[in-house]
Image 1 (cartoon, rainbow, N blue to C red):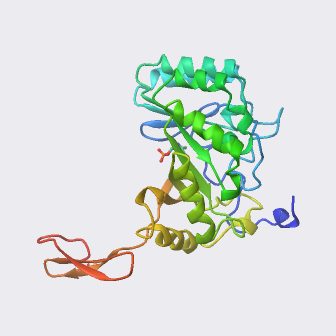
Image 2 (image 1 turned 90 degrees about the vertical axis):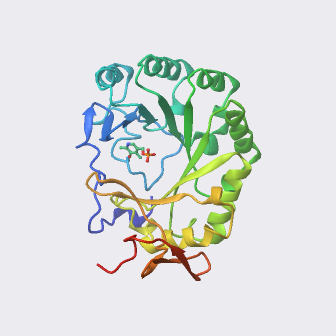
Length: 297
Ligand SMILES: *Cc1c(COP(=O)(O)O)cnc(C)c1O
């Protein structure tokens, strides 16, 4: 802990995303129409100081309890909510659980016919790669389509051990995506983010999200201004492989969900021509008769 964590800035709170408000059953956040966030455990392999769920994790016996007994309530909700086709397992880090527990939960979820898509949010392959055992991979493989969203922060996380863990997951046919939180003084520089994105691709991970730090209490020293993320996207788009460019998103305080922010490439309109800016800042015309995009309102 650093002294800066004791500072609470305006707009910061314990649950900035209003997850507790969107909780449909204990540990189940149902915010979007067709998918849910399933909080499985309060344990992580590392505890991030900017964690959006710091209120709920790493605090055994606290207000938030995550246990198989509680999972039953979440499973009962999912069984009757046929609109849910996508379940994101998070926490805490689901891969800190024993193989048998994970197997049991994935099996229960897979037995619900309307659940098409499973994914696990985890930092384990980068920070506890020895957990990605052959036995664990054997469990995960049974439940395809199963995707994984990996929390990655810095190119230095690519060690021979983490690369081997990623290879095992990819070889098991698990599509891998990444999530990176933009952190001041850690990775808020294209000279860090670009090699990070390239490192992901080299390890068969598709960069998925780049996040603005949530306004969690005491996280101000990590927070960049929002334009920094857009600037980083501008430094990637066009300059490197399209697959290397993640979506930059702000998770809206109060439960609005993820909002994508991107460089504004629509410059305006000249009669039937739409005026667009390319990655080098040059303006191009695209014929778009009858279109309204770019018109002055
Ligand atoms: C991020 C998130 C999801 C998944 O969002 P995607 O854009 O589909 O990756 C689902 N539910 C909640 C509450 C989330 O925060």
